[in-house]
Length: 307
Image (tube, rainbow, N blue to C red; front, side, top):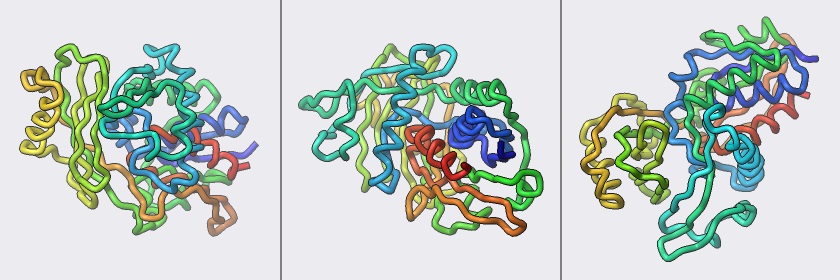
């Protein structure tokens, strides 16, 4: 089978590597940073098609991934995936795409959509994915590149899952950061997740109960490259969440996180091209705010192009 190097060790890269390894390819993952330092590790990680295009394909990718998470939720301690109930305030089924009709546990209420959806503890899930890649015969290596030619010198097929890094590596100037800031607090007993998002606003309100912490958000600052948590923004995030659940106001802050969502003006790119020298380059990037949501669906689409 084909020798493949997947460049990028976040959820998209590891998911793609796993699909390829399970299909019998010899797979190596080259990651610039350890999994816990990737953008994927910072994600609040509720399954939901958020800030991602093209809409015509997102639904199928998302549902494909959803079914996988529903299976993995049977082993939450191992996979990091749990099915958790919560509310998307202000959402209505009629305003969503056809994919929403395939959800198994959703109902409309006066407040919005009440759903039971996958909520993923990303550090655990990324570690599980890497372990699955290795168990399938692949490898995960720390490697920084400045050109895809470096990978093409060692493999006949290269898969580009570099996220925001694709802006310089491809190069693709349509790739832009959408900054997300989070606050981690001790959970005062909240068991359900909550979201309220206005796509036209740079401010969102959400909280996700993860093991050992409650994740509060958030922001969606387009073209903002700063990875330094802003104290005033953190205070505003806590205040917005506390208006929904007052007990959050007194919760002890245990950490701050910033992630740069890898958005792309033209939407997700899953496409193949030839590199000088004859190697094949398969792109899988531009997932915006929904990389976790479409990870498996996009991985399978990219794998089809590998052959």
